[in-house]
Length: 189
Image (cartoon, rainbow, N blue to C red; front, side, top):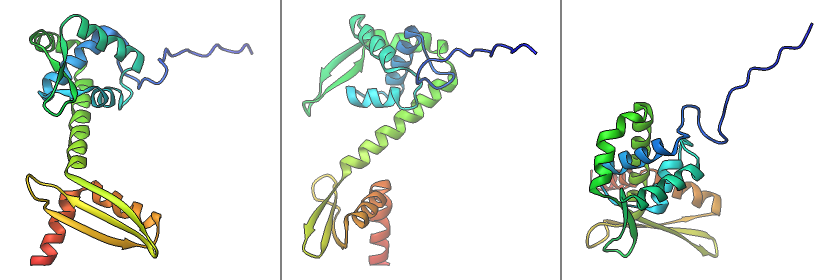
């Protein structure tokens, strides 16, 4: 019996099935994303959001981003804190609102959800600082939960080794608000 040739499925290296491979669609997606979150985003954050689920290749994304800047859809502006962030221009907003239907709704929803998760994680990380300090009998995990003005909480815990320190840090970083709330409830109720 003759061997049947295998059916070839066209794939693009590293791209999730259903992801975008057309620079035109990627440009619309970037405009849509920035229009949806309505806030300036630095390049590292935008890179993380766009490439997180492997919906686009980094190379195609880079080309799309460069073209959006060149054509005036995006501008790179210095923020009050000194960082440079991408800001959607009026042309970029118009592009997003006029052409968003050219990108499948599932991808638009997925990228928006990813953006919200990444931005929420970044906010949580800014609200806390955690460090470990070696001492003769283990490590001290030092935590500060910041607020406007004074810190809400400062906390130190002696743990026997780095493995325990990593567990404590991971649990606190997962939901610092819950850690704070549970500690306060335990102490005052």
